[in-house]
Length: 182
Image (tube, rainbow, N blue to C red; front, side, top):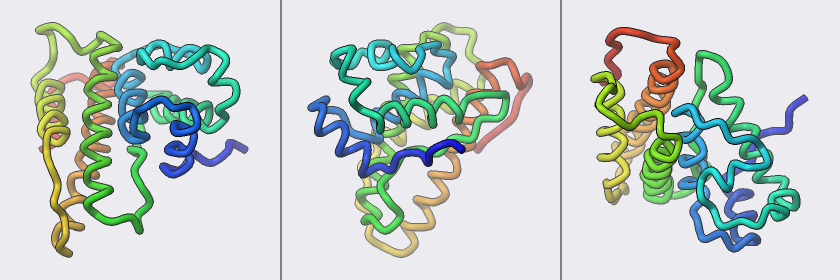
């Protein structure tokens, strides 16, 4: 039986202990984007692939980060990605969760760039559109306070999950043609 994925709070604590200076959602987004775009780093070398300043032996003492990698890797194994951005708990304030989603998208774009598979002019219209949409989400500042905002956040989160899965299928060769996610 696989251990449960680490919570946002667990990753925050682990990153604080390691003094990495990166947000938990941003880190998960970076790793997700890297793996989604075909990055091939393994459990021992993913921090270096993401250009994190982490001593090689530090990861051995950070089981939460090892679980983070394993969970994230599992999301992209096989042709059907099941992407779940690492966000604060559902009972956290909406503004905090929305900001974390923007940070996840920012990290995702950076991770895609580090993998190198999504650079160049041969990107499909869907992939280009997804990357542009993630860029808009990453650049958004959320002032979410109303009940309607919770529904809007859920819609954006659903879009991000679906779009990342589509991006993975496109990059891994599992889907060809046009599949609109808008």
